[in-house]
Structures are given as C-alpha cells and as structure tokens.
Image (tube, rainbow over the protein chains, first blue to last red):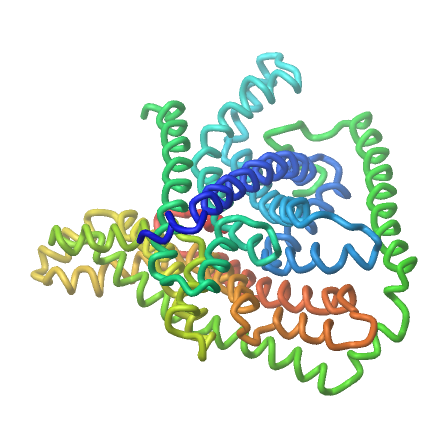
Length: 216
Length: 275
C-alpha cells in the first residue's frame, strides 16, 4: 500500500485525481447545456425539431461511449481539426451524457399532470408564467433523483478518457501497472479515489432531494 | 404526439401559432440540412468519400472481421448478461435477507461495485489474472458491475410488490426461501423487466471496453481494419461500424418496448437506468 508515497507517485496520483474532477465538472456543465437544448427540441411544438431531437438522442444513447471517444480521436485529424486529448474527451463525454440529461428532463416534464398547466392557463397565466411558476418547479422535483444517477455515472465514465491520452486516474493505474507495482495495491488507491468522488456527489444529490421532497 | 394534442407546455395551436410553427419548422429544417451539408462537405473536402478509402470493405477478409467482431461482442454480452442477472438476483435477495451478516455483505458489495468505474475493474482484472484471456477479464468485470446495478433494480422491484403478496404466501405456510423464490422475485422481475433490459443495453455498450484490453470485439476490429488499410480510413470505418452498434442496441431496446406494450401486471412502472 506504500507505493503511493514512492518515486513521486503521490503527485501523479493527485494530478490524476484533479484531472478526473476537472474533466467530469466541465463535461457535466456542457452536458447540462446540451441536454437542455435537446430537451427543448424534444418537447417543442415544431415537429421538425422534435424529430431531430429524437434522432440525435437515439443515436447518442445507443452508441458506446468508447466509440464516441474513438470517433472524436480518429475522425477529426483527417478533417484537419486538431484538438488536444482533454478537449476531445470533454466533447465525447458531454455529447454522450447530454442525451441522457435530455431524457431525464423530458421524463420530468412528462410527469407533471396536464391539469396543472390547464388550471394555470384558466387562471389567466401566460406561457412564461405557466412554465416558470407551475410546470418547471414541479418537473424539477421529480428530476433530481434520476439526474443524480446521471451525474454519479459521469466521473465513472470519464475513466475511459485515460485510454485516450488524458492523464487522469485510469492512466495513472495504467502507468503504475506498467512499472510493475502490485496491481491490487494500485487498485486500492484508485478505488478509494473513485469512492470518495462518488459518495460526495451522492451526498449532494441526496441533500438536494431531501430539501425539495414533497411532504406526502 | 400530433399537432392537435395539447401538451403540458403549450395549448393546442391556433391559426397564428400554426403559421409560426410552420415558419420555425422550415427554418429548423434548413438549419438541420445546413448542418448535414456542412458535415458531408467537410468529409468530401478531406477526400473521405474517395473510392480508395472505401475499397477495403470489398475484401471478404475485412467483412469477416466485422462479423467476427460483432460475434465476439455478442459472446461477451451473452455471458455477462447471464452472469449479471444471476449475481443481481442473489445480491438483491441478500440485501433483503433476515441475517445481518448477509445483508451487510451484500450491501457493501453492491455499493462498492456500483461506484467503481468499469474500465478500472476490467483493466485490473486483465493485469492481475487474465492477461492471456482478456475475454474473461471483460466478462467478469461486466458481471460484477452490472450485477450490482441489476441487484438494485430487482430489489426495488421486490420492494414494490404489494405487501399482501408476501403475507398471503406466509399465511399459506410457505417458507422464507419459497416466498422469495416463487412469489416475490418472479413478480419483481416481471414489473422491472423494462429497467432490466435497459441495463442490458448498457451492458452491451460496455462490451466495447474490450478495446482497451485487446479483446477482439467490434471496436477493436474496427481499429485494426482502419490502421491496417491504405490511407487509414478511420472515418469510413466509423460510418460503417457505429450503425452496427446502434442497431444491436435498438434491437434490445425494441424488445424492452415490446415487453412493456404487452401490458405488465406489475403495479409500478419505473423508468430505465442512467448509464
């Protein structure tokens, strides 16, 4: 277990840990933005946009994340687009996660009963008021828990970036196992790091969930 | 959802709204067409549609590689699917056990493997024990991770079975194992089937991790084809390979929808899991 304190491994470990967090946070941000746009497309009154949103989400939800990383890494250089591996990883991760965010948002909006909006309109509320005062607050409540599982999955998925030259925790594991350290000892430290990340995100979301829970 | 139905977000469109939607629709269509044209023309400008780059697909050897890759993907998926369902049922029952030790052990196992990235586990297994048989590293990794996830799905299914079912079964004199095995688990699995199949789609997608540990599944074969052909046709290979993955996932997804549409007798409906 002491391997982490030898030969400057500790600084590499911390660097990998921070890189994982940075990658996950950036991808979470872009995934949220993309997810909102796609969800707006999927619930819009314009059929063309709805079809486009559906097609986009279907393609990206059913493509393996590794294939997206593969595509971003190998399809862009022939087109004369040269990105560093970190940017490429952020693109792949947010494109993948964005479609899951979209599905969660759409499902959340669909859980609001139609009568709520009808009641709001018959009270004389306009479109903006109906949306911001009645529909979205109710949708937000039911969205928190599934959104939590999407964002807990994100740092786990980000480990794949290590296979595409991003120096994060998985590549730390690769490098150390090539230096012939004990694989179980390496796994122990990596596992500890991911457990810490995963439990902190879990804690945030369960607090949020408790805050906004409906008292029934 | 047709144009005539109201949604929670907007009313049934009147004449003015219909005109506006039509204009937005045409603008959207033009935008999407422009996007497609941009992508296709930048592929064409980079010479990605030249016959030389696509000729490798005419070789039977290359076609065979795609078939072999898809079959190896399906083989790893089949083994992992069976393994994860068996492990998932055991862990789910374990988490609901009356024995403290069993309950705690199953909970710890489930929480641990759910929090662990699959790449890290598969790679550690590959390095530790299965350097010569990468398939087993992949299958065992997939089984452990997806087993933990399936356990949570099945457990929530068991919890959603009305309490009267278990009470009635006990009143008839069934044992604990019988109540679980022939009353609760079958109902739970039936009501959770869409979520279970949703997780199986995730399992299928995750077999692509074999790429990292040199298991010759579809993605690994794609890389091999692209890097061994003249001109490195990565774009053509992805354009051919990605639809194969999407088709396999959609087929499984279609199965889930079909089962759901047959009308389940379960009382609860849950959505599928996140990746």
